[in-house]
Image (cartoon, rainbow, N blue to C red; front, side):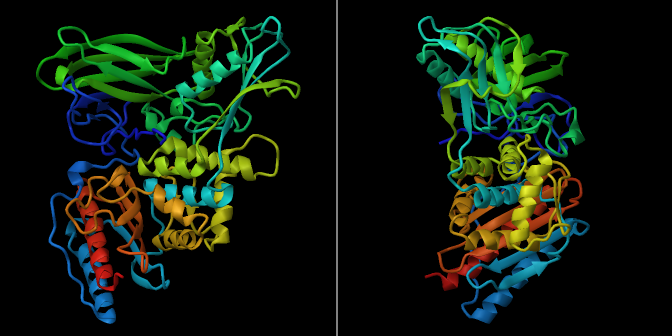
Length: 543
């Protein structure tokens, strides 16, 4: 299983490029790993994050405890009326959301019958529910078995001496899951081919994508340095972010390390974290972009029982970051590179392939992407769509990726110009899509056996895992909801599937925009009540 993690600071805080940890419960990137007793400590969340950050689970807003099960009438018409009444009541029962925009649609996927709709044609910001568009378009266009390959080539190799009379090249194809461990494995494979010394330099071929590493709308918060806003390149590693790990050392200063190590490109300029026996863990991480490197300053204190803390910070030059990590891996494998600089150029036609790494298939990649709402992976998938569908041989652009999604949506009846979806993750102000349009997407995916099963498997399961792990606990809906969440400062969205058997699954989309300050919890509760009603509606007709 791939190990991708969510990097989201709390969405209602203000972005600052630094963070101070406090022991609030949440699912943001800064977290405690394990305490000295071996038990898991509560996750730590940043008090400084993005005003328009991506998904977090907002556990304090999740449905708590058990709920009295709703009981719907058994008659067909009576049940339909009952469901409509309960869905409408869920909206009316939240007067603090009276000024919010609410779009809802519920459809019986077996019959195509629309069971309920409320303002379902108005364009809405989908937040991370946008990943549904990216996922379905990718599965339908690329296929569930699509893989990304990272390959290493060398110029003329003297097999007797192990000397490369030229350069070593790494050709990235955007693998969103490429890790430092994968690069180490590539380096070992290079050494196994007899390479000992490279007279030239390490050269990166990142021509699969163009040089614009910032996805659309990411510039809306240029000062945000959190990992959830990481840049995208044809060759990237660790999702283009460095992890700062603080480990408590009882009786002394805490240990601060960086993962992965990237030579002189990422420098730890300050590490002043004390270990305390009591009190609260408070750690500040400042990221400062310099002319030729990223500088990190870490300060504060960590409670000994909290064990470890980590936070991810985006880097500015993803290809260089990955190259420095690979250079280190080559050196550790006994491959010396004579020239220090890193070149940027296509792989020559006569270069020899000496190592390759293939990613997990797309079906598994989108599973981790959606379960944990990973923005970086979503944006790589979007640009990969552009690379694989554009007719020209030039590097893929963001516009190519958007065009590929648009082309798929047109095939299923969502006409260009009737919506807006500018990036792959839904971060910031990227979308205007209606509930009806998302329902068209869900119906198309459900009807296509090449797409539907992998889409459903990729979605968080209510009360079980991912961004829905804490919702519907103690409710009949637990385990019966597969849906993609979306959370921004004034946005709560949820769309996916509800079923109690295979006979009559429901598709639904629940979007709330322009949420008044402090009212995200009622918006989420409204969605939860609607799901409870859908499950109750389905129970009488279950096989």
